[in-house]
Length: 399
Image (cartoon, rainbow, N blue to C red):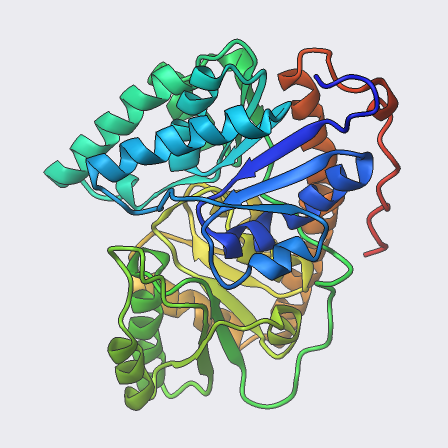
């Protein structure tokens, strides 16, 4: 740990700038206000200024989320190693599987003391059983065994399924593991509002990749239309061009022309979008951590239909604040949506329950407090004395 009047340094390593802003900005601002110099190593995209205006130090990163080129992957590890030696961070926070594996290897080479690895879900590599995916899983498992074994390495999991899988396969020791439910949500920004009048709106808020379930939403919409039910489906999220399962704009336009779903693209005003919706639907079979969209929906007082799968069942309790269905079951999805479309009082009751659950367990204040405790453990007692009692976080607002 740096001494004297030199500020301690924390470095976040994230492949995508937009993901940092949506999932880690509140945490970064908190440790900035504690007195850390905060560095953010991520892709040099159009959001660099949004990061720098928060008083954070932007570092362009070669690492690409979906690159498979061995030479490029080796260069990414070497770049990270050189970056750690140049910045000399006291603590490194890697976010998602590739930064976790490559960043941890680089931290070993650079002899950096504190490493926190956030496993934010297992992604599309852990969906399906093709030979290619099985080989990729074996490669990831082998890499994680080496990468996660540092003396001060700590691993944050977002759901117990992922944690138990890593422990069962011997990828990480139990004492290194912490369970923190998601990235947290601003419960003041995402607050309940009355349902809008008119035709009920089903909102699908996610990146446009097949495993997130937009195809199942479109199929369920066809079933509901045949039943003569009045509703509208809205898809809100960017096309994920770097993902091999990305949905094309042509396909999204076909759904629009068919009359089953309207695609809005990326939406900045997500609180306003939840307020204009009646039901939030995410029938994902992606290996999620905990989908931020579902936490935002619960905080906004909207009922949720999602799959009974890791990460989703942590935020949605069946028949309490939403409905859980089997993955890839369009008939069950249509039935669940119909139940909520035809029962406004049930929607209201579930929305109220979701808000209570969110404020109790998923507020950003709770997540930040828990993450700071992991930071202290990673630094093995070398947390700066002046930071032992961090400034008070705002309490969660009344429900």
